[in-house]
Image (cartoon, rainbow, N blue to C red):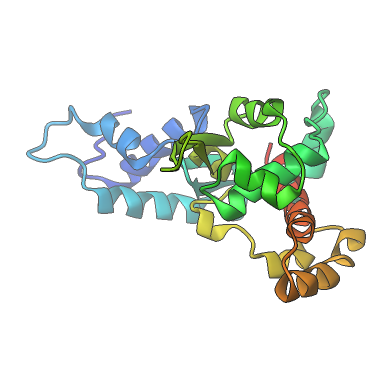
Length: 228
C-alpha cells in the first residue's frame, strides 16, 4: 500500500489509526507528529491537520465497542464503559484495592492541590503514613511539584497526567465537583452527601472535609478500575 499522508487525508487517518491501536500508552500530538518528520515536504505536519484527522477518526469509531479518546497524556483507543462487564470476565486478576486512608489522601490531593503532607493531616485529622504517599507515587498518580516556602520547605504534592488519563480526563478541571458526586457513587454513599455538604458549608471541621473527600475518592477510584 502506497500511502501519502501529506496529500490524502484518508491515508493520514489510516496511519494514525495504526499507531494508536498498537500504542501501549496514550500518544501526544507531538509524538504523533514525529511520524511525519521525514516526509518530503517543505513543512512539517500542521497541528490543525492532525487534530482534524483525529476528530474524524473518533467519529469513524463512534458506533463500535472501542472508542478513540483524548486524555491528559494524549490520544488512545479504549473500550467503551458499557463493554466493561464483558471484558472484565476475560481478566483473571482482580483490580487493586486501596485502604480508606489511601483513598482519602488521593482525593485530598486531587481536589486541594498543591498540598503538603501537613495540609493532608490537617484535613484528615490524623497523621499520614509515609507508605501512603509512596503507594500513590509508585502508582503514578501523584508527584512532588515543588516546595512550600516555609521552614523545612515541605514538598507540595499534586496529581499527575497519568492520574488524569486513568480517569479518562484531560485536565483537573474535569474532575466531578463535590456537589455533583451524588450521580457517581453508590446509593448508600449518596445518602451521606447532603448532610456532609451542609456541615462543610456551615462549619468546615477537618473531619467533615475529610469525610466529603472520602466520598469523592470512592467515585474517583471507581472510575479508575472501570477504565482498566
